[in-house]
Image 1 (cartoon, rainbow, N blue to C red):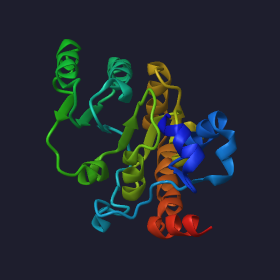
Image 2: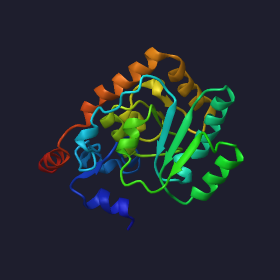
Image 3: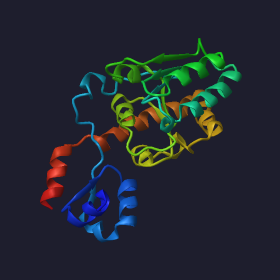
Image 4: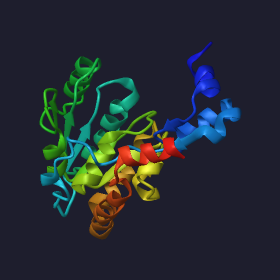
Length: 231
């Protein structure tokens, strides 16, 4: 018996992080639909240091940041392609990559081959990314697929504007269409960044949106989970 079949048959309550994941499960196990619920992750964990709440304050875009595992799923090579387009236009951008993973060597090689040594930095041993996210102008999440990336909650916590790919549960975290781009589309990613670089009002609006959107994820996760079990 497969794990999902066992869950669908035996579990009294099945909790998902996103409606995307819940819908996918129900499509395959419709008989379990009434026993499912969605509770997203919340900004209610020890690593969301209150000192960094709404700490982001830049007013223009020059310092980009990526935070995540260095693997194929996170789409870093698409981000490097987009950055190459933007740098070719003479834009004074720098990209900080924070994370480690199996593609570290390949990413370092790609940075060197593209001549990005002065524009891209790679930090692989960072205990907490919150201070770096708070200090950046724009967080980029170019995932090829993803369920519920916590780095977007960190961006909401700090108030840092973000551009992310429209995959998995990402649109349930960032609902603003102009901050979402198709996966694997370096041109669309470059255009989204370009717009925020060139339009100060759009950038300010993106930052204000992140601060407002944070409220949707400030809740007692344990309390909501217990309520679902009781219901």
